[in-house]
Image 1 (cartoon, rainbow, N blue to C red):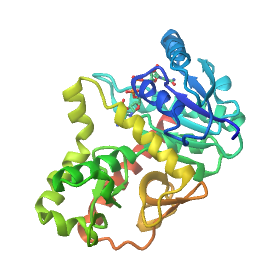
Image 2: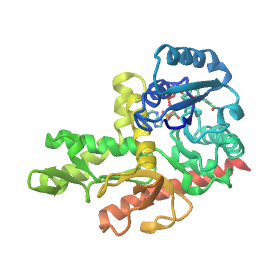
Image 3: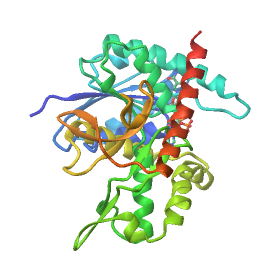
Image 4: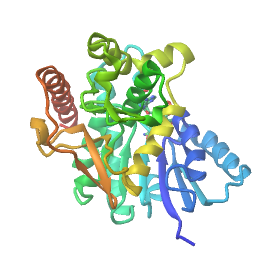
Length: 331
Ligand code: NDP
């Protein structure tokens, strides 16, 4: 039998956490034969709720779940973890300035970076979900210099999956037959969902999405805004932000990272830019990536047209501004 993998979930008493921890305990993140020990962290006001989640995990009697740590102590939470899913963050409340929210999150991610750096298992893989996800991940990277940059990522897989879902609905094909959409840039409304390289499986081979949709106006406008604004649409409908889809995508992100993307397929991940596609180096930017043996690489050589270039640059610009704002919160 395999040794258990320790998985940290921060903000575990929140809505995404509540949807995520049972998925992890059922093997959806790391596989049906991989035992796990869950480490759950939340802040003291949420300690009682967190303990309730722990009770439910015990009650669910998950065969793969070999232990649960539920704590408000970051050091205890981070000790020995192999995977860290950072969902805890300070929400933007009505009337709050962007800078105030940024400042709260910068201090959270700075201190959690230190706890992970000192106490996580070597080669721990980190996924930041909490918003502003890209910039929180960048701060975490800056303050955990001994964790390799390639081990620190942020979630844009939900946006990626939303794009797959929209194409699937439009063409009335199974979502599993659609692949290779790309989310470029920030996990925000400036993200660029790109279908120029996406394909759909048909009886006569893979066909480009553009050829099948036959409506460039829809693909260049409504499709893009629908994906960009999907989070807001869910809040309007549910009166709560998306949680099950966020949790499911976080599992997809880690699963593909650890267990490989299928041959000929890529997914979107927010990663530390090396300057690929002329995206400024040093930003956490979402790229198309393929994963093998636990490592992602940016898919190279895709042709970029002028329409895409503008949108990729606009979202990079927003990330540069967020980065400056985050740094100004440090001083
Ligand atoms: P959620 O579980 O709904 O969301 C958690 C974070 O994920 C938020 O930052 C949210 O951003 C972000 N997120 C990223 N992508 C998505 C998406 N697609 N849909 C929805 N959210 C997304 O929030 P809760 O308030 O229920 O739970 C947060 C937990 O974090 C609480 O248990 C709280 O106690 C804890 N917390 C921890 C702090 C700390 O570690 N110091 C500080 C404050 C809270 P967005 O806000 O933009 O929706």
